[in-house]
Structures are given as C-alpha cells and as structure tokens.
Length: 142
Image (cartoon, rainbow, N blue to C red; front, side, top):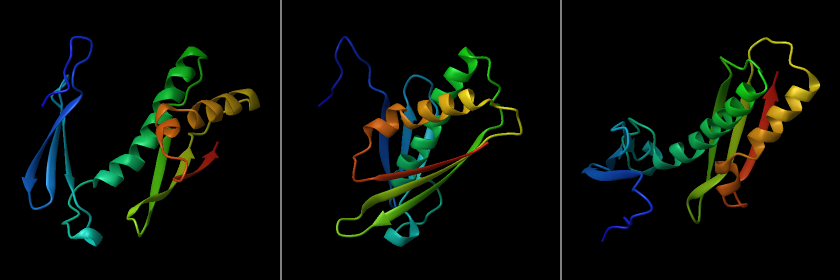
C-alpha cells in the first residue's frame, strides 16, 4: 500500500538488504544512506544505526535552522560543528538521552547573536518532534 497522494510525494524508500542492514534512498536527490544494527544489538555496526540517525538528525537540524537565521542576520557560523552522544535505555530499548555539544569557530559573537542562535537551535523541528521522555542536553561553546 502506498501513501502517495496528489499533494505530497514520498520522502524516501528503504530496502532491507539482509544481515540487519538497510539502504535508504532520498527520492528527490537519489542520495543513499546505509544503516546497520549496532554491535550491542546483534549487528555489524559498520554504518549509522537507525537510532544513531535519530540522534544525528537533531544536530543536523540545529545547524540547519541556525544557518538560516545566521544568513538572514549576517552572522558567520561557517565551520560550526556538533558532537552528538546518544544514550540508550533498556526495557524498552530506546533512546533515552541525546547530548549535543555545539562548537562555534573563533568569532566575536555578540550576546544578542549567541542568544538568537541558541534559541533557534533549541526550537528546531527535530527537537520539537522528539518525545519529551528523550532528554535533550545541549551545550553551546562560543
């Protein structure tokens, strides 16, 4: 059964390759992502796991929305990088915490710019889409 309708197009198509590996294709661009189950859950751990992608999506989303606002306000944040640490819980197995360490390049950000970037990052669509039981712990290093 397909969920396609006239107003929307599917985002991706995912195929199970066997051996706990999937290949996801972004339909608009053709770009691919491979996932593997992690080694602590019967997998090879040779690629992002689905929960790694969940956690990584948070950091990517934060950078993207900050980039949009930075461009609008002529703030140079090129080279900003994010370190993500995912913490798993058991019973049920799920993502319990996502730690985000945001590292900005040397710059003379004003207090107003820092506050704007932090506010935008914490309100990104992925952050607002995650279940409240997933603790998001974000630190900004300017």
